Length: 425
Image (cartoon, rainbow, N blue to C red; front, side, top):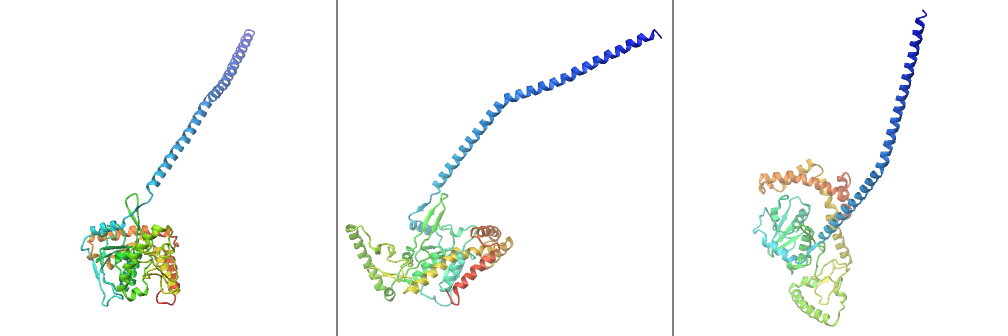
């Protein structure tokens, strides 16, 4: 027993010594870990402080580059817009007669006539000219011209135009329909309203030729950048009318007109020498053309005679007739600018309705006798798709109602209300 006690005592001391050593090592390790974390954080913060100026410089450079790039792109875009705008400025064709004459020279003769329209009775008014109508069978403007010719029982020939290829009017600078050619004078009349006004003016002045009358309707031809020509006829809703004496004696009227032109030329020459002021008759009061005709409807009420007493600026013989003429012109413009735009959205309301409409057009226009089967197929289905898209654009452009039928009914009611109990407007 006495020998065992020192051994146990030494063992306990050794154990406590090891325990103290392990404790000190553990504490040193924890402090080392803490020191490493702190050092790492300090190093990372120092790196961030060093990298922040670099990042801020890079960010500022990026901002400057973005602003410069945006300014450069905006400048280039603006310059291109200005350049395109300058290039898009309208170029007007001054010599329209030369353009029309070249077109008539390229026109195939005889034309590919598809139908002759004649009547059992003579025309309502004598009309010695032969007309050829280039049309689409279902074009509302072509229908308007046909209705006018049929009502007056004026014989005419029809050339049905392929609405997709349009090779029948490739000779013409005016690419739309209807187009009427006065065969006797080799004269081309464009635009449905102008055609009606020109023929009606001839009925009022049968001593004049169509070339003389057509000079009252000069076109404003605008040439686009792509070379396309746009035709506009500012006077297409106006008519011309002589005084009653000219109606009673056309021969004397022609003789007086020749003498008036000679006297008028002398007066203009002398007036240019002695006076720079123009008289009231040289202004918009009398809109005289070089052929001695006066444009009706320039705003003078009741009629104003010129010095030679040849023609009179009047819509009718009195104030009531003048108001009636203005009313007719108002509704002619309404037909072209309002009513006609409600038709296509109703005819081509859906793709199925568009296809069915073109199938009916094929029957009504007798396309089987005019076009081969593949052209009929092309016109029917491609034309239906195109017109379906056009109808949607017209609906948005003219602010038609969601139900386009209602817009059509509104126009019909407006027209019925204007006509009232009268047979005609």
